[in-house]
Image 1 (cartoon, rainbow, N blue to C red):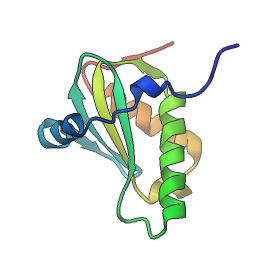
Image 2 (cartoon, one colour; image 1 turned 45 degrees about the vertical axis):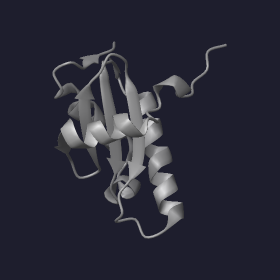
Image 3 (spheres, one colour; image 1 turned 135 degrees about the vertical axis):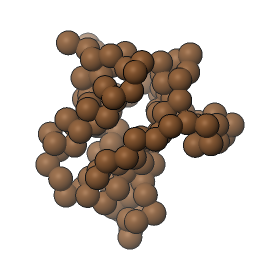
Image 4 (cartoon, helix red, strand yellow; image 1 turned 180 degrees about the vertical axis):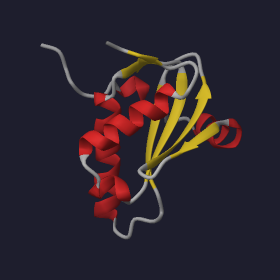
Length: 116
């Protein structure tokens, strides 16, 4: 049976890689989240929440929502390090709208491809 979770090897954990991502990477901003990206040899992703969230409950909920958006995204093939930083409107927006916006943002990155 196929697992539907996010592969743990795709989670970005290295402090040096995270620092390089924020220092040297490019950013795409939208109302629901900011995406920092940098070309890489393997796909890795970091989930974070903006400091604009007032409570830990909201921050954690936003990060869970962004993980699910990434998992359900139709853009599968990319060789990027990505950081998704959730903003407060991501919690109140319709989920399908957030997914579509995430797909649009990833497709704006030259090395990302849509998976049919």
